[in-house]
Length: 172
Image (tube, rainbow, N blue to C red; front, side, top):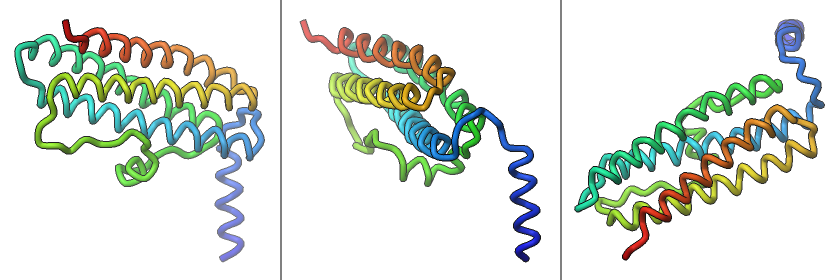
């Protein structure tokens, strides 16, 4: 039995990415990126939820804005997960794991006012950008320039989404 486990470990190490990170760095970076990935999925679902349940006099504009933002959020999920794999880590495997790691709260309310939807998504995008900045700092400490580079674009996108939501939600 121990011989089988050793053989399996050898195979895994033979095919593991060799990104030049220490095992501790891989562990820290993968954990931070997986939490970020869980938040990204949570924000995507919340954005689609609000997109599907939008109403009111500005329905069309808000509906289209949230659909555009959801697409942008979903577009970074695969690059985050692939980055975890490239550095030698393992990434999320289930909705349950996303649920355990996410820090962006779900909104299961039967009704949410459109203005409240925009405000909540603005706050969530700001929180996501702040968490991305934290991961960026970890990347600097661990000399992970590739992940840091990806994060810079995503931070800008999250801040832009928050800005659009803030401006769209302003009341005259």
